[in-house]
Length: 317
Ligand SMILES: NC(=O)c1ccc[n+]([C@@H]2O[C@H](COP(=O)([O-])OP(=O)(O)OC[C@H]3O[C@@H](n4cnc5c(N)ncnc54)[C@H](OP(=O)(O)O)[C@@H]3O)[C@@H](O)[C@H]2O)c1
Image (cartoon, rainbow, N blue to C red):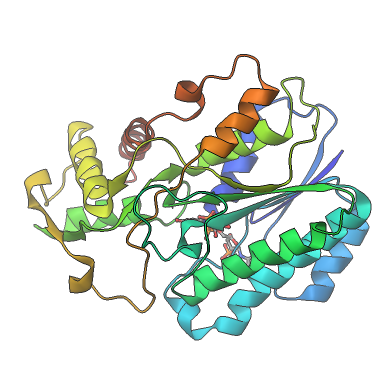
């Protein structure tokens, strides 16, 4: 089985590499990891050539244009990577009866809903990044809407952290440099470990024997359990790092809450990013007799603590 993984130098792409390196699953896999150097996704010809030559039966698209604020001024490039490239991947998959695992974002929503977003809720992205990701979702589902071969899953996730730049690492860097941090307290979401996201994605697409299985194509929300704010996340990160031995200038009591309106950014963000994972849980429960929601969808705090402790232990704080 040929597996093609885009985004090899990103957080999620690296998480997939660690997972496949550590696992025997799938036993007959020939995996190709692709980054910008091997295939620039804004170059359609280069993408089509790669798909034709490698002929994957599974594509994992962990790449994306993710610079949310910069995206406001680079619309054409953003759409090329986040909407046109995924559509080309979907066309290949639909034509060849393959499988596509793709990723999207909570930023497809405007954040005005009270409570948890469902997969079918109306998208109303606020910025170029969110609009391009919503366009990518739509393009993929339209390719498959005509009853074509193949299958796809679009995992909508939020606040991802892994091996790369992310909010948690920024907080730790700032907490070393400054006595006090002002962090937004009125935007709600769920921090998501890239390692966890990679594992959950594969559990939809593979059985325990390591065979690719069929699943209902569509959008799935994929985040751990619970919810927090950026301020709640920053406070836990600083507290955990200090407990793990990091020397920081900013103490937990110096993480001050502010409102989003006090910290304007080029791209507006949704105030509420919470997403229900009931659909993914129900789908996994149908595949696994021993499915346990508490162990597959643990609370976000434990994974953040583990991540911060590892950063401290590795001398990265
Ligand atoms: N990060 C988050 O907080 C977050 C939140 C919600 C959803 N998501 C979604 O989750 C998925 C994974 O995100 P992530 O955090 O792993 O992103 P990431 O760390 O920014 O990685 C994205 C990768 O895509 C690559 N890429 C960008 N433009 C490219 C191009 N033109 N050609 C080839 N490769 C290109 C980047 O390459 P370079 O390394 O060369 O730049 C990078 O390695 C994405 O679909 C993202 O939209 C992320």
